[in-house]
Amino acid sequence: MRVKTEEKRKCILEAAKAVFLERGFLGASMAEVSARAGGSKQTLYSYFASKDDLFVATMLEKGAQIIDPVFSTFETENDLRSALSRFGRVFLEFVSSEEVLAFRRMIIAEGARSNLGKLFFENGPRRGWTRMTTRFEWFMEQGQMRRVDPWRAAMHFQALCESGAFYRLLEGVLPELSPEMIDEAVDAAVDVFMRAYGLEAADG
Image (cartoon, rainbow, N blue to C red; front, side):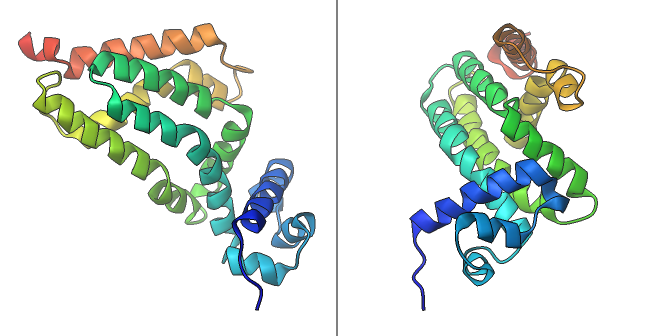
């Protein structure tokens, strides 16, 4: 019996990322991934039970490298506006990157036909945004934020960051988001969020 290794797992994920980006979700096959990873389909299935599982793991691997540290930083910031501004910029840079856009478009395309979207959300984004809700509760206790449903507040902040230019990018209307466009989008998102949820909003 072959022993699973982290090195082999990463090799598979790199091969899978290339195949998904080249073929799309529907066009990708476990056979091609295993061939590129230099192993058998049996070995591949010992690591990932299905193509859905492999796709989600590939996407989460990239997220863990970039977004997880950002959520960690958010948890250490003691000023709400500063925390949102810093997080928003890195978050929008991440979701607007070429690879993440490609994967997100695949998730949107397959969401209505499979369990892919739910599987990805439950294993990735939900965990990250839940960490933000915990910090929001701390900001509420510190008097920097109104006492509201922290999950709804987190979802509102995500929507504010992604509104406007990002959706035009997602739709293919814009070719990319410049640093200036990201700054403008995040500044606007933070301003609206603080007006809705910040202490100054509570004070009227």
